[in-house]
Length: 188
Image (tube, rainbow, N blue to C red; front, side, top):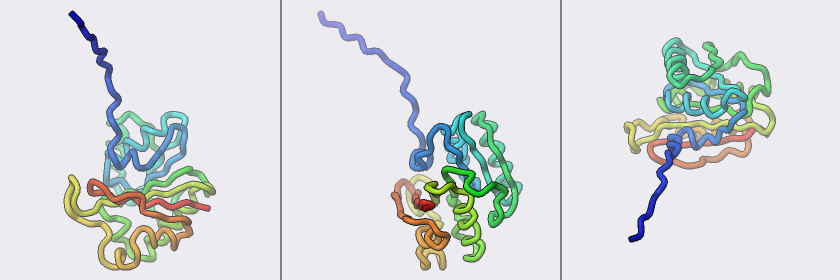
């Protein structure tokens, strides 16, 4: 009689798509702008670990409370700043990556002047060679149907065009999947 014994081991759960697509690694310095997706914030901030930096810039108390709650639940250290997005309270070149949470269309809904100012600030706080990733919610997928890129924003080229105007190059859409669109730009 042949008896096979399989050793069961605990598998590490996969990261949610929006976290995995950022490519954030241990030790990196990451700034997230806006906090509408708590899974995104806690996942990205957890990835940097104690050797990295996780910062959040928001404009209002509601987003700040959401960020604090996500950080507390995940047990992560978070450098939280509440204020205007066109004057981020960080030094130039302070971050390896900026993640922009546009899952509720906050970036898309800004007037073009404010959106361009926010993206120029994201460019400023990135180190040369750093990257930005805009994560948008689009129709379909598991969560809702609101496409964030609508109206003048979409007609003007959406996140790709906005990032290019702010000085990022190259800029490209990485993927659109499961109700998310991921657009990346580099600071040369």
